[in-house]
Image (tube, rainbow, N blue to C red):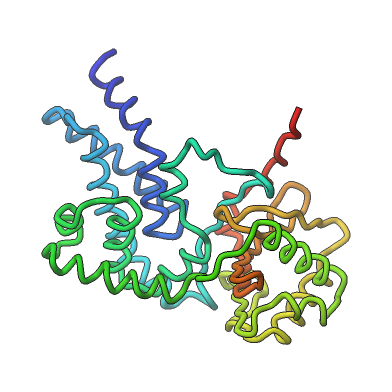
Length: 302
């Protein structure tokens, strides 16, 4: 194998992990892919000057720096975004069990609810937490990327850790109870049953809707079981006869997608805590759904 072919093969092997890292830092799969593609060009140029011995190690640093630069510039754009800004969702078929053998991928996966929480952090805090707590880089490595001392990066990660702990579910829920709550949520919303829908919503439930200023969406979060339930029933009532709602996994968590033929027009991510729905995040912005494809249903067991 030639030197260029070996370099390309090594980068191809590292690419999925690099993309996961950039996505966790940015909340945008499109931007993550752009950063990873740019890294390949930089890697090829660097290797032409002097052979790169540790391709993945070199690329991790380059992608992290590129994602941090992108995150800093994106922050100013998101401050003028119309309505709430939500991450780009990643869809898989409902009922698809992740392969336990792929332990690294599972450990580095980021739930939709967690991505929402990460948006509240500063770029430096988010980078420190993602690189250290999620991707297990040592603090001196993270310090070089962020441009701070290891002690300062340790403090950044500690602050981020507290925000993450405060903003993500704390109570576990059995799988069957989890499925029952999601099924009850879907049936009540589709049937317009206000009381039944309210019963599966946490007293502090929040609904956030991201239309990107291009389609109709709530400009402010909807708070409380009654208001959220009424909003959801209204959304369900506007589903057209040529559209259908399918259960999906959104970033490995429960959710639904609205399909118009094969086009995804809305993704709804649910966050549960103790068997109740605590967050409902709906993505309608066309730019964030452009890369979504209706997931194929899981194969039936032979």
